[in-house]
Length: 143
Image 1 (spheres, one colour):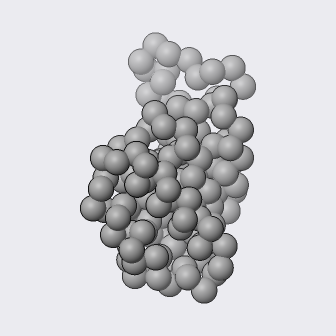
Image 2 (cartoon, one colour):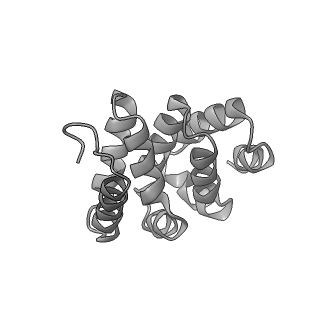
């Protein structure tokens, strides 16, 4: 976890480092025993930064949503995800890649796991207002 988190922070502009780092951490995150290390090594902030830096890359968004999804199993990670803007990162990834099944599946699952948090509804409302104020309409079926 430490090595991957360090690589994510050390090479934020590298799509490959972000994509493969997210993938490795996603697999490691299947074991709840490593979630404490995710908090210790600030994986949440590194993932959110990587998702923001590489919005156009579907694999980064899918793996980022998947990683956030597994991190939601820990209440500590949920708090960090909320505080660092992870809900917004997931929503942006889902909106940007509305036609990609993997992003939608893992993003929806991450949001479901955090659904007790009213922050999700606020982010969706803000996005809808921004979209409408910009004269754009969300894609059909995605509002």
